[in-house]
Length: 208
Image (cartoon, rainbow, N blue to C red):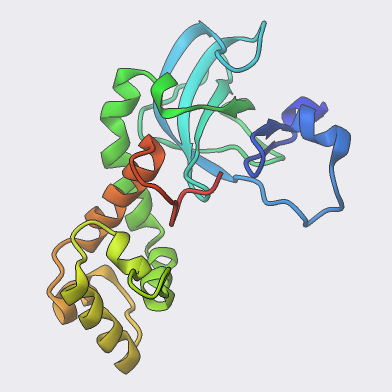
C-alpha cells in the first residue's frame, strides 16, 4: 500500500504521504480512525490537494472533531451522516484523507448537517464527554471550564461540581436528573459548533 493511503495525522493537518517523510516513532502521533460524512460529490476536484479529483467527501473526524476532505472509493455507496473508517489500514469506502478543511470552505449542505451530526457524535461517545464533565477544572480564578459550555452558568456549574464530588456522573440522563440541566448532549454539541466556526475564543473539545 502506498504512503498516500496509510493515514492522516490530524494533529498537524497532513496526509500520510506528507507525514510519512518525517514520521516519528510509532505511537507518538494519534490518527483519526473514523469520520462522519457531512456532504459528498460524486465527481469533483479536491480543494486541498492540487490535481486530485474523484468522489470528494466533506466529513468531521470522530475523535479530534476537525473538518476533513476525503477521497471516496468510486462506485461505493455512501450516505450523509454515515460513519466511515479512515484509519491507516483496511479502508473500503475511503481511498485517502486529503487534508483539513476550514468551516468557511465546506458546502452549505455540510454546514446544515453539522449540528445534528455533532450531536450524534457526542451521544455515541457519551463516556468521553461525561469524563470531561467529571474532571473539568477552573481556567482562571474567575472562570471555570464548565461555564464555557452554553447553558451552564455559575449556578449549574456549582451544582455539577457538588454532585460530581458526591458521585461521578455516568450518563447524560443522570446529569439531567441530578442537576436539572436539560439535554446536556445538545449543549456540548453547541459548544463544539462554536469552536469549529471560530466563535469560541478557546477550544475545549476540538483539537487542531
